[in-house]
Length: 421
Image 1 (cartoon, rainbow, N blue to C red):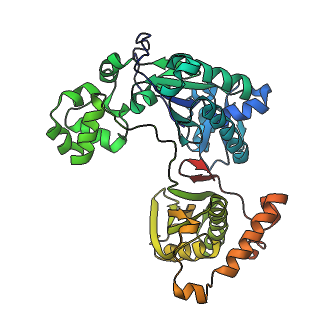
Image 2: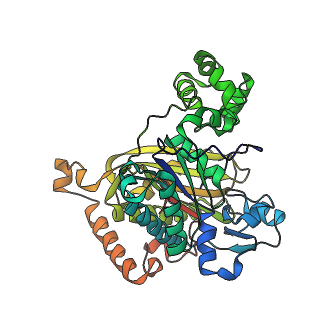
Image 3: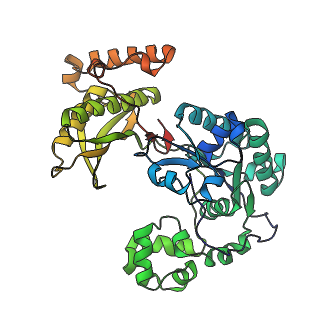
């Protein structure tokens, strides 16, 4: 879920020449909140925040709530203070996943060249759809109309010659708009922006560039490449210099390899008992393993994320001997990683498990030892049986026995390469 670059006074109209602008970036507006408003229309016009307890973070907020300074990833406690009259809605990730599938289906009917970036945004190359549907801007309005009329959801679309500029344009088109940046206007459009608008420039990179006097995209573009590289590194410096001149040759790639599957949770209260943390890690590993099996994937690397009561975030990772989609193996690895984290007496606020280094399950090499004695095979069969039960009766119908005696709450977020897991 992207937010518009902070650039007050930015010019919003660049002409209507869309002949050389085949790239569209479709970005759903306040997606999770919009899905909630679709099924709760009585909340329209009111400030609405999608999130969990005060210890969790904001997943989405309507523009009425954003007017009070609320934004995604903000602590819920802070959001409630900023907007005490907001209606807080608990997240329903199954509903968001279903809505995402609907949106992507609409985009897939426009062109086969759709690159899904996350649950609520995608790039399209509409070069081959022009004869059938018209110019890129007409296609953009066609998409916006279909998504609103058929799905009841608003979206914004950026139209440009490259992916990077199209993504920026969709941000400036929000909410519920469309912005065209003609190819001939690309450099002028970019050079009006602060350097933080460039793709890949986070807070630290921005600070490094500003220390060298590079505060705008124009500053960066007109600096020599070596200066930019001294500020942020050789590879990143060259890449940012290219972006500052609108050079972005990356094509729209319809098939994106899965990078990771993960789940994390924020505790209702800080937890110092490691046996309680390990029990929650089992639940998170179970979610990850189920998602891996659903996607026909296995993971070679397991990573652990913990956030302490003083808001320090620590991560650890280890590579397994063989790829796996078994919860017990993910859990054992995460517990070993937990044992290696120096918490310095701090209780934990959040824990997360992520499965990385993904491969197709059919590509897992079978060693001679495995063929003779695959210790994971019985557990894999048992967990697949659980998958079948859950598919029929819901996720809470069955789970690992070690969790039965404990009261657990579901993770506040669960992601897999930008998708909800």
